Amino acid sequence: YYGLHVHEAALAKGVKVQNPLGEDVTLDERLLEHWAKEGKDAEDVNRRLSALPLIEEVVKNPAEIWQNENGSRTYLASVVDPYKPKGKKYTVAFTQTADNTVLETYFINERITENKRTGERLWPAR
Image (cartoon, rainbow, N blue to C red; front, side, top):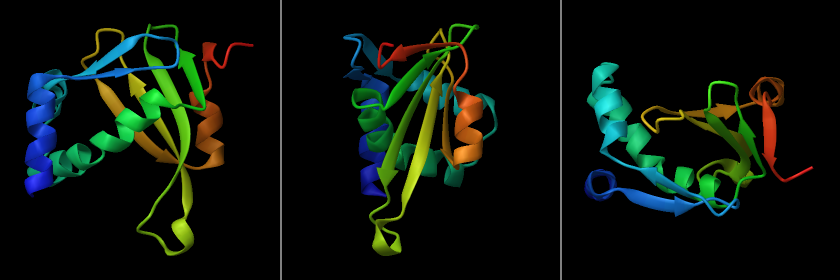
């Protein structure tokens, strides 16, 4: 649990991560507020908090960034799960709303990945 409190404290302070477009993306207590408003239980919040370092990594080094019509952004990256046999690879999609209040993280398969590729591709530039 110690590690989760570190992530919670980091969110309270605000974690600033730079994406490849040179923009600062801030992960902060608005996430915690959103999860509370959505009625996420402690276990779910802890699971989300434990994904924070992964989210930071995906924002810093995404394979793709998509800007959706509503102003939200979706970051796509493939990551290796060190806890799975043979380090199973999976795709992470991470969507952030334009006002930075809602983040969604998806661990997805190829079929769903296509659904996340909507709007304008910002990264890599075409």
